[in-house]
Length: 388
Image 1: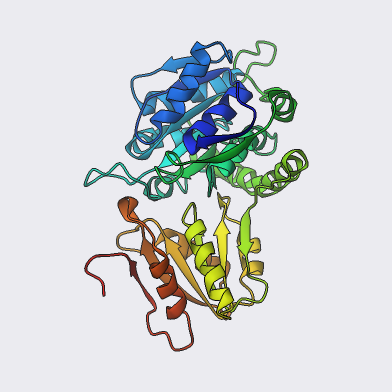
Image 2: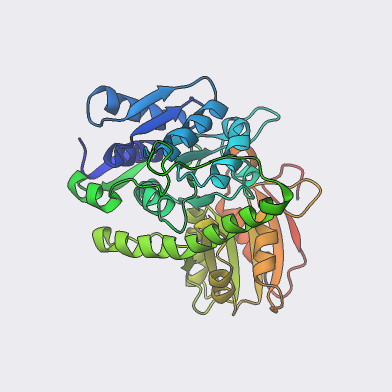
């Protein structure tokens, strides 16, 4: 099997990470743009490259239901989905988090219907943002691989025990090939380690009740325990990132600050569009403009302190959302605004890239121009055909 540097799509990179993790159970149902992740992995299973029990279920709801059962029974479990599949799965995603099932989910981010659209935006991730799961966003195929290798370690940490979603933009990352450096199998295996949950369902020496009905005298405390677990995940991500850096020289991050040291204006966003923004930042820096980028890599738990510190010196900041919240402010904007509450940073809001529409360099230049002292636009849409 492949090791070293190979030309891989994000979907293929995730499949190779899954092979190296060698999960016990993978319950799956196909949906674009997730399908090539599971197709590639299924071939590896069929070729005997790993020992995984691949379970073809009848829906995404069933996939997550099976994942919860297998994870709590004591089997390392991974699944994958996108868009409407995650929408169907969402009921059980909440249950997985509440039951503290450390399932890893590879998510090919895609627009939610309707109208029907198979291309990438972040509306599916936003659908489950309050479910209690972790969400890590990859900028590239390399980062999707690294996050997938790290995800079991984060999910299975005893003070976390929550599902971890590894998110990559549909088609932009899932179907685009780039050089990816894979770790040797003999390095990944000890890094990931053995799977352990504190109270496996089939431990007959310690009988437990799992998934019971909660009355008002216990439900509130249960939800607070979930909150404490997801708060602990901030440290878990940082710890695993440090260990991964020792192996690869690369570090997964809560946030990536790009040329922010002396910046006066910044853009904040999630996902693969950061590459386009970085190119424009470099171009404007040559022209003497003090601009930068803050890419949020860990959307859940939301890294409030890291964002507050990274943006403390900014005069104006634009938050770019690749999702709508009809009737409310865009979701990433509201999180960043809460993080910066009480600061003097002026925030502006833009929605872009819905349904897979590209973010072009001229769009990014316009945002930075809007952020100048004389810029009049306070919010808007990027690339909307009816806009000026």
